Image (cartoon, rainbow, N blue to C red; front, side, top):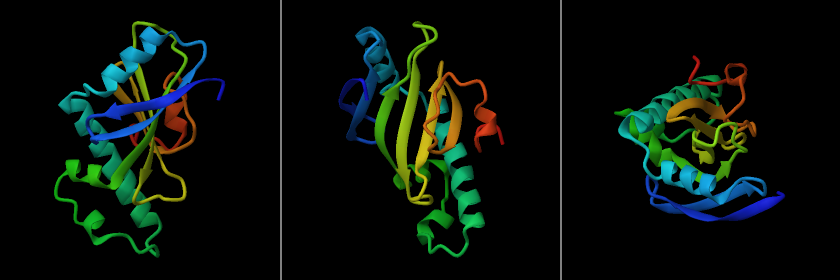
Length: 151
């Protein structure tokens, strides 16, 4: 990567994760994105969970020969899915609009260890949850990528 790398604290998961930033992104914008990550409102968290559960259930159905944890199939509420997601890093995408912060999370997940998971949030709206494909929060074709937000 041609830019800055480091670690940031992610309060929702109570852990440090990696940070990747292109060299041309102003530090003020990076700080805004990190602050937004650590102040996700309950609606955004609820959406992340809802779409993650859909991704999980779909994957488990498609790959029923895999021996998944019983806890995954017995989720009692959407927020329980967070126990099965491990955020690894935040990438700060080159902004199209400096006033709009974005979140591009790369995560490991218990139901798709081969492909991992990506969560994209643009302007306080979850725009992508699905397989990690190195997508960008500003892409206009996110519905074409197996996106559980658009299902």
